[in-house]
Image (cartoon, rainbow, N blue to C red; front, side, top):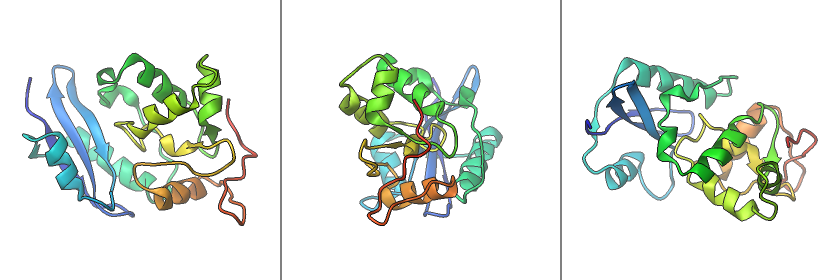
Length: 185
């Protein structure tokens, strides 16, 4: 197997990274790394993929450009074929695919997703699967919120999560909770 590579890209929220690898089926994204207030994207990549080298390819750069446009508020859809979804556990894949199906401008809750997957009481497990989503933005985990309308976690931080939801037309109460009039599942 070839070594991991990565690209760093500016975004509306700071630098983001895409870790990728050349496979027999072509380049595959292994992780999208969003800005983090505790560590630089490059540090996160080096800690997680120690031998990764900065290198780009056309398909990964096209993916990066689509992510950049999404982070500016454009209505961009993503194809999962370029992701290495197979590296996720079966449970996480089910959660990520359920999240992927939530349309732009809608939200769901961790508990609703769990019920949809046939796991009543599985809200925390769903939350953990989304917290470690290797493909944030491509799989729009910002569309999952707490049952009471609070944002919940997001790898890019709550400021980014709120901005992405606002780009999609969602509204917030004066207390900062998502108005859940467009709820999925």
